[in-house]
Image (cartoon, rainbow, N blue to C red; front, top):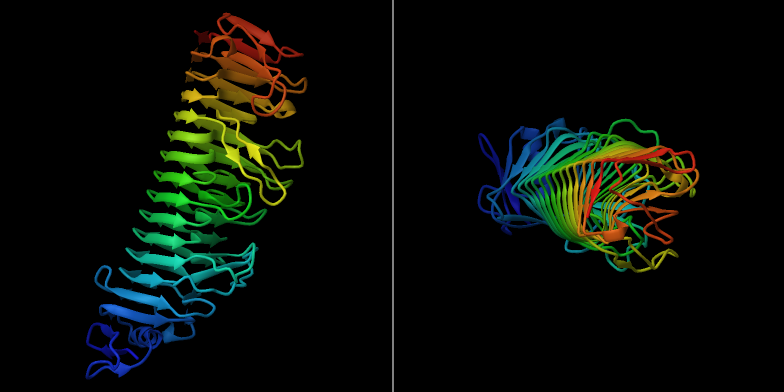
Length: 467
């Protein structure tokens, strides 16, 4: 068994068995407890420490928060089985720096916190833990085992019940989910997540919840797969029913579904993200079910190359789904968007993406974007879900179809102005009756100075140029 020694300004832990002379023989959990009682940081000497079911609470360790640290990459806390490796519940002020947490791909029990609405387990569990920090730590080997239940997932770091952690400059390798946050204000910045089996980062709320305020920024996420479903998994960043989340300055590549997927969250910001090689919609904002609405998304200055669809703001309540509305989509660059085959799962599919650069259904402004080499450039509305859309000042180049608007008799007001469409020929400006680029498509002369179309002439097309 390793041991610890209390010095004047620090507590030292040593992994040797037996411990060196002058050290008290104890588990690393007991060393953390002793350091908290002494209100001193715990320094881990190089080596491997076994860890299981350590709980840091306000009722132990004198209710004290401390820093646990080591030299970079030298100390490994190795999970040996149980409900979790480490749980911090209610206790604030804890900090971990340069520590490696290894789950050894062992089974972990689901954590039954009130705000968790699915079978979620965590190697590290933060439950109502405020001001908790992980800096330059490494999390690895938390892949779900064959014995763990279908529909359940495990995270390297699981946050619940208004936890408020900051996870910065950490690395995640071979994990099921990197960070999964439930009803918690979570900051994940400067991290590297490679090889997630279901989602890189997941931020979840509940219907009717207020601002979540989580921030996902400046992370690198690569190779995210999916073991089930047609979009709930396989995303770099997944947000569900969480409001006021910002997703900024991330690089996200090689995902089975989306780089960023937001389901039923309001006032969400996607900005300055670089996205490459996404099998489905790269930046996807939707209202997936009745009552799971989303309002006020801002999607600006992102770059997307190679995806099944580009930017989608979709669902308008007509197919048993919710309503996603009030969107600004501006300054984005999208290229090489083409139909991709998506395999069936859970009774849905198989299906194919549409290869459209930008689609917005209701109450949106689409301006100043560049769309190149896509099956379709910009689509305004889906069937009767089209309403109050402005498409102005965009450049669409080398797309099979340029600008598409809904021809449904119930479609609402639209303005299509000052756009340039190059290389789409007779399909520069068309109307479509339903989803995607489904025929029949009706072509219009995009070079007329002005025209009014639609049953009630509710669509104004003015000052566009096509060649």
